[in-house]
Amino acid sequence: MIKSIAGVRRRDGVSREQLRERWEHKHAPFVVEHANPAHYRVTFFDGTADDAPPRYDGLAELWFRDRAHRDAWFAGATRGTDGFGEFTDGAGGFRMITSEHVIVDGDVSRADEKTVYLLKRRADVPPERFFAHWLDIHAPNVRAGVERTDGCLRYVISHADLGEPGDFDGVAEIWWRDAAARQRGLQGVEADGFGDLIDAEATVLLLGHEFTMVD
Image (cartoon, rainbow, N blue to C red; front, side):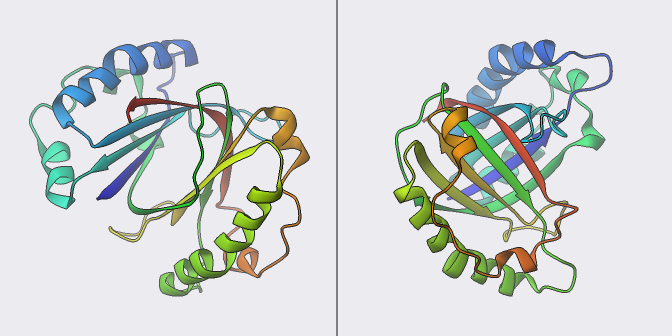
């Protein structure tokens, strides 16, 4: 199974409320009907850790059986015919094809706060080194922090290793019971060298809430 991730930004003149209303009640059901994804989740972003406006308004995550299933949807004549493109800035979004790794699983709901890190490796770091360090060294380090932190619920990483290089090399997602838990932060996570591999200026941190269309 592969996971397709898309970041969405609304078009000028479209309010956040208009985009969300159209996405949740018109576009998402359309995708479920015509793409038939194995799973489908949407995250609406409210801001950033420093209360700045978010770079993206939402994140779509769709799981497909295989590459052929995914390509059939993106190349199909039905895609794009529901008018959702009239609400979005196509040039301002991004898309990646990823392999997902659930590091810490847990029950989450729309009420829980979600932190999303869009990560970009430094130009001089080979992708194989970046993904190996992330999965084999950094992820276990963060997992230990998640497991010892009250109010930290789930931790998932997705490597953009199944397609052409894009704006980002992967996504890290952490769910929290509430903003207070997030603000307290992970407990006992030690420096492991992963930060040295990241292009900090290109990395994006976003805060939001996720809802599930297809579980």
